[in-house]
Length: 229
Picture (cartoon, rainbow, N blue to C red):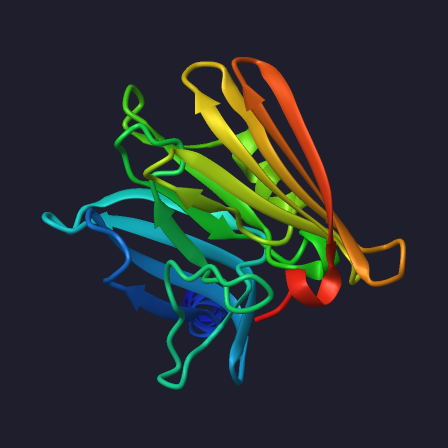
């Protein structure tokens, strides 16, 4: 009877293990290799419960394991996921390595479903905590990656985080934030493009915070001129 139970347990765990899909990512980070395990893969798409195991490149030691309720991503022609790709309205990788808070340490964003605007990619964003020596979730940055059009972008030279949002075809807004150490995000710039009024013009409003005061400039442009390629 004991041998029978052991056999059942072995079959159960073997089936569970074989049901997972495993990928190794050696590029994308200067410090870590990543092992991705995800529940379901069908053709070019993977999704479902997933884990990301981060290993030190020098020692191969596992430094942390991160979880996602829906590690959703597409596979390339070699049946592998991409890494560090952020394309508006297009490919966005399951893992994004970057210094999101500009403190000199590498951070990571992990894909978690399609919960951003218009059913776009959403991410859990982790920043490296040098005191705890591990990645910790950033609620502010995660909110940005859920409430806008997919993953935000960064400008390391200006130390800005950039988000994009829209309403239908004819209203778009680009927003920039700076990070104040130990305080959080500070919105410092907006570019609003509004062509919802119909006609041949788009109203462009630039808002910029300079010395804690918002400077606002609005101008109308012919649509064909403004959006010409």
